[in-house]
Length: 353
Image (cartoon, rainbow, N blue to C red):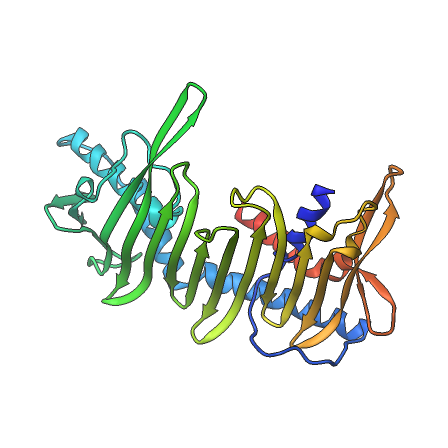
């Protein structure tokens, strides 16, 4: 049963997107619903391609490649190696993700990384000078001038100590990052990252905004309430809101071990799943229709309610399978409806791998 509950909650996260208009009462027929989902899968592919090929991503990847490729030859090799490793470590917060752990030999204060790193075209390495900030000056691909500035203006860490019996694991995580990447004085990437951590390394509050031209990502997460947690996140391109998720979770006790109620919506462009999961209403027979209330919408029009049908699988075991029930009473497997979108997601991940 617990597996079913979590699977139901995950349905709220199958898609991503945002639309604030109230839903209409117009119901789509099965053919219209299928056409709607096919269009959504094409939009998903276009949006991912636009992000991967954006100027911001290209310059971040060029920086990572530059740091990984430049030769350590001649002179004070140990100093050059130190410079290279420091640049790679710091760039991981921007490229690989700010939540990565910081190892014992990695920087743990802003003072550890401050410096001006300027690409030397003749020596094919970075020259290092003192600075109050962390600044990397390097060229765009094919440029003969250092027309790119990667700057971290503020960086703070928090020490996390995890204890398991006789094992003590202590490490550092970033709690504050203010940074940008500019090309020809035009901001291509900008990060504002502010996270409060618990003693065991769990984020309890996060206010993060990331701009990767032309995309903007925003996350507002709060786990500071006594018996509830909230998450609001969105992705937009220029002035167009592409995706969002708005979810609230309430718990039985202050320990937040047992979920009571989940409500919210997850939407990608016009496709949205909205509803709630009332764990308190789970009956002895475990019928999910008694405690899961979800509806699928398209551009504000109701596609249908999500219902669960008990079916027998090829191994002879019975399990509840989610279906969309249309206005005319007919039903269609939810996974089949979303097959084009799920296939597009699988293809994207496969390409990245």
